Image (cartoon, rainbow, N blue to C red; front, side, top):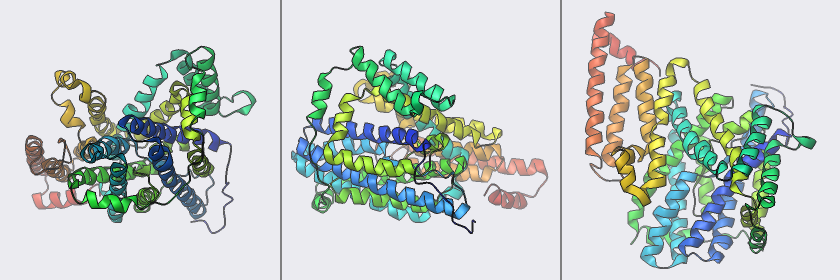
Length: 509
């Protein structure tokens, strides 16, 4: 621990690249929220006047707090290379709230404003659940192997970030390929761009110019975007309390969605904080989970119906050499853009193909970190933990409109994709302990998998008793097999069964 004050900079040039990566990530989510809710029939007065400003308040709170945490860590360890945690709306959770909360609430009530209030109440409750979960955060972190956690994160990074954004990059190849080349040369090759412009900003500028010059982006997009300019104040709201009456009344069924998705969000935060620890900056998981929960509750108090989380993009920011400045700037800029309506304007003007390559880099850096931060012998565990998210991606993108196609590929895609975060961690942990020949802990995690399957947190569309019986039985059977392996291994090593089991309990703890 350092005994003197460290001159930890408020802002440095590397923060600029990281800011654009984080801003684009948050911006993309805000645009999806706006476009989707407008398409559902929610009026612009709610979307731009309440939802976007409320969500922005949550983003502002979290970014400022994580900048404070970064400075605290820098002073504690006497370092100036600490990177603040990236923070924003959780993308998977956002989709659940859009289609699992807002849609049914609006369908049942027939009232957009009431549906919004119910969703705000759900977000407030979700944040409260994550705060409660935070009390066990560090303990859980010690019990879960790093290869399992980082493998799960790498699965998200490869599919939903790097993969999805590479698809968008190639949607307009003349724009996307040029922007991708700039990102690779600037961020991977470390070559300076003209006039020392940050490579991410340079990619966005060149990509946008190409899109308009070559006709891929219509000039009318500018006027459409400017039409949203206005003043949308950040005002506290009692919507959460109004909606709570319905959430615990006629729409109590939505609670079955909130519990698993809130647990997922807490685990996502834990995984992403652990990924950052592997990259060199170790933050307190309990505090981060509490901050994410409080952020969601504060956002809900201002009308934002979406929970927040630490982003896996943090490691990408670490690779860029960012500090705390990018986080502070993101909070300031998002506050301004939300209040003025600039978010919608920028989304209309800048083509996705111009900014997608930034997140391709972020996703790939996450995958690389998952392998680099683990011993070579654990690579199989990292790889198997990544796989459930391939199923989750296919299920999420195609199952609603083409279920027969997904089923035609394999009947296992949908159940493997359901609760992918839990499945990834269970499979990864089991593999780690098998590699370590710690069959007792492999059996423990198999039984946890059985329990999660039984209640519907894995391999099932919703919470229920005996939700996925075939999977529960399967996990129990492999737990029995691992018990057999324990005794067989004890026999082969010449130890008494009691001595061997005692050693297995302590091994890898």
